[in-house]
Length: 79
Picture 1 (cartoon, one colour):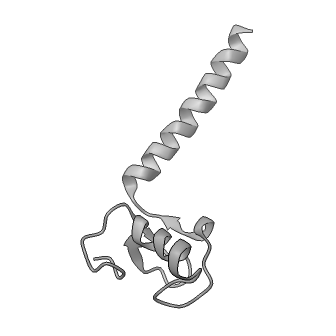
Picture 2: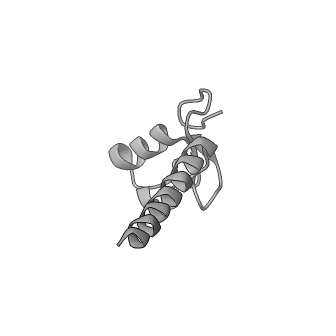
């Protein structure tokens, strides 16, 4: 459950200081629109400090990195 919207977590993320889970959209909107701090622990928090915990996003990011490296290797072999 998201501690900002109190709904079901969607694309979960967390504050690195208190480890409370929130919807990524909720936490990033809070930081951008309200205050650059965690609404739970009140520590100063920047967007790039938010930890993505949604496994789908983590897997997509890792796959993208893998394919970029793989493509670079193939290009080097072709040259």
